[in-house]
Length: 300
Image (tube, rainbow, N blue to C red; front, side, top):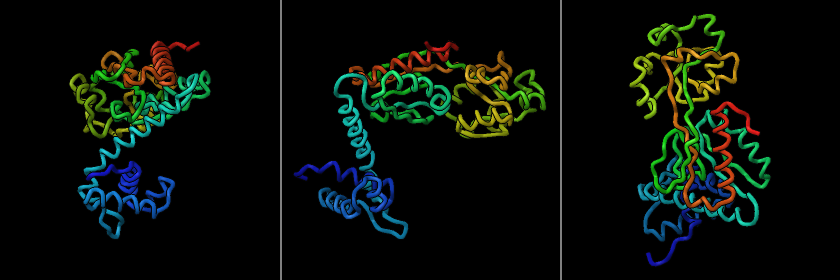
């Protein structure tokens, strides 16, 4: 290849890979179907390779197309980063900040913190990505992340805000019906709410709490929000943030001396974003808000 290939060709390739058809890609990109088709054809000609084959179920990607996907995704992330960087030009804290957080933190803890941040900086727009998967800040999948583990990459700026304690909790109605366990072995007589698939955190924690394992759970879900909803509904005994449960007078702590898991909590962002006013303001607001949450204090 002696000529450069336009980015929009790769963008169309990625859209077809995601949506499985030219029409679906066109709707997602806001362009016409023939335009997407021309992009794919031009990309195939430039690469000298076939990217898709037709079938009754739609377009099937070839191995070449699948090999190109991660590189196209990197280009997409970079383009989004450039757009966010351009939106921050001018005075004041303005533009878009993309924040990644776990489900429970993103739903139960961050909204009031972000609401106060938005009131202070009306020109700021927040994109909140909720996932228990660790977003890759180096690839710019997010600008800032709230993580439950210490980041190891040197390119990241990180601030530990404290430890979030996890404990066993149940609704008062459940305990009234089934009684309060006196020790961990008594959990065998209760409906325990737990995970479906082990995570690295679960594997490390399981060493300290023998018996708290999948085969003993009456309710299983890898969604922390689903587990929390089951606890609140009185379905059984499950793991919940102690400070979060303390906000609900109907929830009771169970076996606090026998079961306690501290989770290190960090606010992190890429070092290249330290000069961004919007990212700096958001980073500081998250640190301040999470520290207040852990201290069970109200922010001024």
